[in-house]
Length: 121
Image (tube, rainbow, N blue to C red):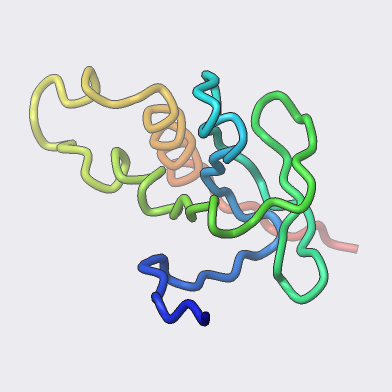
């Protein structure tokens, strides 16, 4: 008997260095805690069928992870607080994360720096 059911999960291919959310299916189905965590794709296995991942921050390798248990973590989501920061209102900085404040401070410092001329020979 042939299974004709279609998956509702979109087919996604991942790239080396990309951040993903990974759910360890064995831990999940056995009710263990800590089954879902953020990883970085380290290696694409033969034909892109599985991936080797490095969980953050533990660094323990996850080998041959199935993409069925992975979801992309888009940069736009990580940067949303910076992109939508209400900088024109009083107290806006109080509601921003430390990472957003550090990024904005760095950008301001770069904008205020005098351009350097190349060294003459």
